[in-house]
Length: 596
Image (cartoon, rainbow, N blue to C red; front, side, top):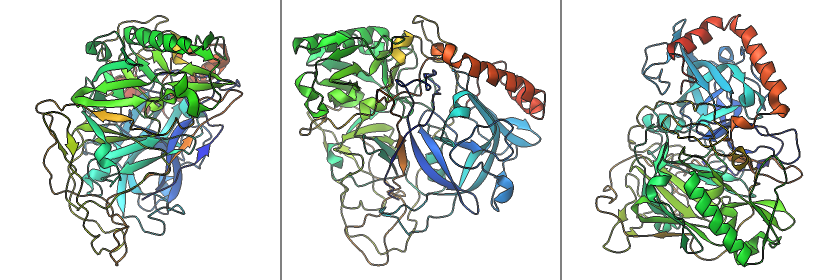
């Protein structure tokens, strides 16, 4: 399914696993934006807006009988009004919260998730029908989606930014059996791969299953590594360069703490202190060599690294700011244009969009992969990068033969990617399912980061929230305009021994959306291009900010809200949810959070 994306303004959100914080949404400088997908749940189907989160392993929406849920875009989900909703009993395999066992309350599968900035979600897991809504202009408009089931959380309680956000809930796409895409794989709807493309200013897109990108041979891959927590998508950063000069740290620096994590919910990119200091110094020297001058950021409470004197036209930023390269394990190199590491302050001023993460590890956020198709190929345990001109206008090639897997053929020098075969589309009926997919990903456990210190602290697993200077984690860059066109944005270096792509195998390629007449121009793979609409909030200075920021930022602007939340929670705990919340916290052994 192909669904175009839009941009929404005025949304509020700031919550995370690896990086957390609270943004001053009442001011004009920093407000919050996020990417979302629109889904329909239940029978009759009801529409919900869910934030795309590759760091979460469960999806959830507010329940109609929620005792403490905020006002969101759509009405809460009512299991009693759905003919197909089934509460999950304890002890079933689907009662999987990313930990050895979910909590069991009244023979219902209870989940609880707490984030480091003190927002939280808890409720019961249920299973119901799910589908994507038809959108005018999509390749699947008017086609009926297959009946598939989705296990998701029905919230009984929200606090903090989850309570205050505009979106209805979360679409968990982490590396876990209960994650959204894993459930589709298990039901033989798609192959075990998906891709995200976050763009500006036209939003983005999500692809489920194998998609015949026209320039698929230009996609470069890096292995997905087993991390200390398996539900994160971890890669290896080998080296970074700024204008040809190397960032003066070893590869092991990027891998400290929880390693280098790809995360759709993090807007900025965060580097360990040593890497950040070297990187920012190199960018500063390059900018000053072009006549730019340092200037303070828009908000005095954040020590943003900013420059003035640059062109207002973002397409000319490459004339004053250097090209940055990130080299990954397996030989993949991603070239970053200025607006993939800067955010717009206005009036020819720009600020650095990469920040100090103390000793906690590296987070590769949305700013770094703007207008880049980022493929999470879990079937082959690799991540792929493919730059595009726009996430709203991605050229697609001929359909791949169902049951084949794209492979990369390594050589002794530069590997090349063998193009997928392009036979005529087979005759199918709408929403026809072909062969079977691979299985889902392994279970994953979650640890909630502890409250961060004012200064960077060592961060052995589990990861801390923001441990660096709060000023470095707070900026809210807006989603930027397209950088200058021309030239490939990635290169592929020599593939190491043992890194060859697995051979093709028979497998499910997706939902067929053709009619009875074969058309070579209509592709058969699961182009379930989810309408992941980019919500970006623009204030006096347009900004584009992370959900993963320091709860250490919580100050006077939010003290009353936090106190109010805590007071309401105390009241709730003495009421109907007392038993459930108490059981959840007790079973967690006093830990700050339980991952789902």
